[in-house]
Amino acid sequence: MEGINKEDVKHVAKLAELDISEDELDKFVDQLNIILKHAGKINEIDTTGVEPTSHATNIVNIFRDDIVEKSISKKDALLNSPKTIKDLFEVPLIAEE
Amino acid sequence: MVKERLYKLSAKELSDLISRREISSYETVKDIAERMEEVETIVKSYITTNIYKAIAAARRVDKFIYKKKRIRGGKFIYKTKNIELLTGIPISVKDNITTKGIHTTCSSKILGNYKPIYDATVINKIKESNMILTGKTNMDEFAMGSSTENSSFWTTHNPWNLKNVPGGSSGGSAAAVAVGETPLALGTDTGGSIRQPAAFCGVVGLKPTYGLVSRFGLIAFASSLDQIGPITRNVHDCALLLNTIAGHDRLDSTSVFKDKEDYTEYLKEDISGLKIGIIKELMGEGISNSVKDAVYKAIDIFSSLGAFCEEISLPSLKFALSAYYIIAPAEASSNLARYDGIRYGLRAKKVKSFRSMYRKTRSQGFGDEVKRRIMLGTYALSKGYYEAYYLQAQKVRTLIINDFKKVFKKFDVLISPTTPSVAFKIGEKFEDPLTMYLSDICTIPVNLAGIPAISIPCGLENSLPIGLQIIAPHFKEGLLIKTAYNFEKKFNFKLKPLYRKIRLNS
Image (spheres, each protein chain N blue to C red):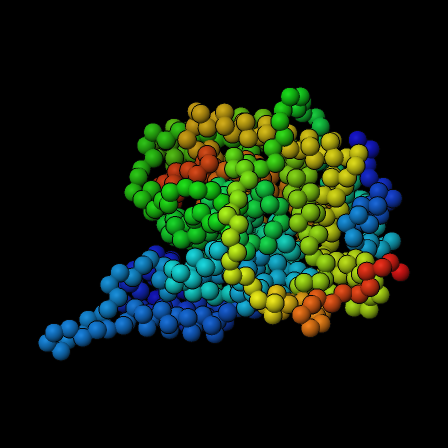
């Protein structure tokens, strides 16, 4: 598999909502290439007919009864927010610049 | 007679003395506080200490233990008859486990000021057992790392040699237990983060079966792999702490319904006739000679105790590290999307739009390793790469599980080194992520398979401890306790940092 280049890293950073400066970019490209080269080894093994595992125990979909229980108060829910206004979380304009 | 310092005693020893009312919880916590004062500025195990609240809590526990009632004839007796084990015993907790009203940072700037409004289920359990929280321990940011150097606060030092790392990501918990800043600690293990630091610090660390211990209130890293478990000075303490934290929790949908066990029962059994498999793939290239020698000596000890040892091969383990570094970052990239600067944590200043706030907050709040893994995971899940990386890694995971299933038909437990080498120097691997990742090569397969494993000390190289890993099938923690305890009794390891005066430059 071919490696990851500057443009790929910029694209991935954008998808992950991270700003990566030009200075950092070279370092990350190099490091991610080394890691991906190692990770790419998984393609050396034949997995024809093998089912993927997403979770190592056999439990599936545990549901709770839909009963209203006491929940946290508004005051508590807002306690850790960096910015609030009255009973609400405050955020900057959602429309793009 | 010079009175022995209490910080040196194990949880079991302290517990016996407290229940016989020979010492109080207050005296215990106070001596731990004194030890912290002696060593903490140098070892730096804790991010947040909780000593004032701990002392108040110890006094409350003592009040309960020493409560008297009047009986006939004007005499008094103690009202509390059965003092449960671990009552009044100090414990430290890794800083990715949520504690109500106490800072929980994950060693990240993004959660630097976060004070949770609820307790994790394991915290409720230790509180119900009347244990005393001494503080929150240092770790690699979001548990991503193998040396605690990725903490955005500071690096914890290995109490055996201060120039070396304590391992990670639960490095603060392991160092605190090794140096006497607490007898018990909780850590978390996603790819070896309990066992590897336990090995580096010469203590006992157990990663339970996926689903045995509730993860409600654990800040998620890689949800199909994360588990909470005990870090202690000996196997008996490990069994006691596992008794406290194991059990079903309806608040964690991955928690398994299972009858409660008393893991201390397994301490009574011997291991004659036990079938032990030595994992060939983890005894070859990349493993240092002194580590291999220590494991071979451990095999001699097991044989002398009547166990049957034989080398076996799990061919797919060769691919475990590669698969892990796709799966764990992929899960992390999704889990860490929640850090948006809105409901909790850091928010970047001077931002005009919502989008730029989100991006700047994350860019300022996450350290390099976290960014690397988020990008790696995003890449592995992105269009065009999903099948070659993520899906293939999940299939390799199946092959690893099948390999374990196959060998467990023939063997009761498996052994390997916990780490390829002893604790490395601070700074040695910091700029080289892949080399750092390779230090988890022996522990990662266990997380992928969701099975339990324990690390116990089995030797020294240049005065640094070597860890032996014992692996068992799902929910066979009892078998791990039994095997490890029999070894520990015979091997008789001395935890030197407990008796050391810790000085700068020592």
